[in-house]
Each structure stands twice: as structure tokens, then as C-alpha cells.
Length: 167
Image 1 (cartoon, rainbow, N blue to C red):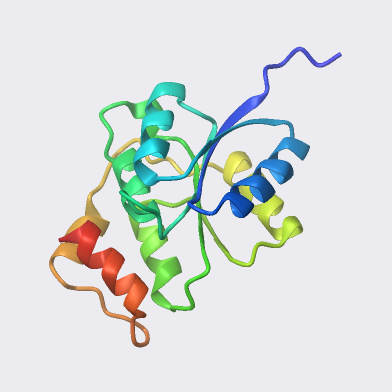
Image 2 (image 1 turned 90 degrees about the horizontal axis):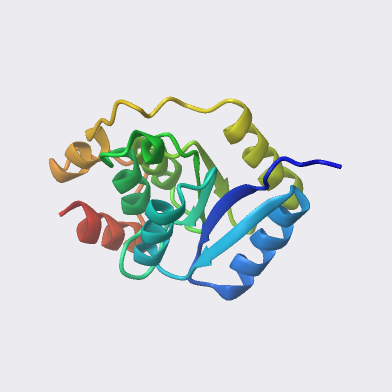
């Protein structure tokens, strides 16, 4: 009998169907799941629970997934800075993955989600963690200084998120 405690994950997405799908897939990997429908609620859960993993959508009410991950990477608590974060998005924009990684994501997964690749991203993020102990505000400075150099035209949704979160 396995006596190890289940790993904890916070799942943040404003769409219930995505939260339910991700919860099902992570439960199969023996995670205990906590869900949030806003970025603010997810950040609060992360700070209260210090989970083993965060999975978040980018386009979220109150606080985008990019800002959520950035807040984690610049938190005063080093345990929170080290939590792997998987960012998901359905935005068809060449800049989305780049900005997610700049904000401190461990992995990026495009929607619509595919079970095998999603679970592989989870395993990679946990098996090969990136050390975010030294918080670097490069992504915020990068975006605030308007140095975002898109590979192609940035979508209106991503432009709105950048304006809202990055000033």
C-alpha cells in the first residue's frame, strides 16, 4: 500500500469543462486537485497550499495566467517560486508560448488539450524542474518597455492581456 501523500495541484481556468477535463487527467496521475475559476483565486490557493504543480489558462478573469505565473516567480516565499507551472492557451498567436515562458512557465500546452501530450508535459515539469528560486522580473520589464517583438501580428486577445497585465 502506497503511504505517500498525493501530490497537490491548483488548476485555473475560467471554463468549467476545461477544469473538469484537467482534473480527470490529473486524478489519473494520482493528484489531489484544487480548482479556481479566476487568476486571483488561483494565486490565493497557491499561497495557501503551496502545491506541487500549477496548471493555468492564460486568458482568465481578474488576473491572467501570465500574471499569475509571474506573481509566483517573484513571490517572497522560495517554495512558491519553485512550483512548476504549466500554461495552457487556445490563442492562435506565435507570441503566446514565448510570453508564457518569459513569465516563468515550466511548460506550454496548446488547446484543444490532448491527454497524452498534456500528461507528458506534467511529468516533464515534475521530473525536470526549472530552478526559479532566483526571481527575475525580465518578462515584466520586457513587456513594460514595449520591447515585445512579435514574430507575427499579435492577436487582439493577447494585446488586451499584455495591456492589462504589463501596463
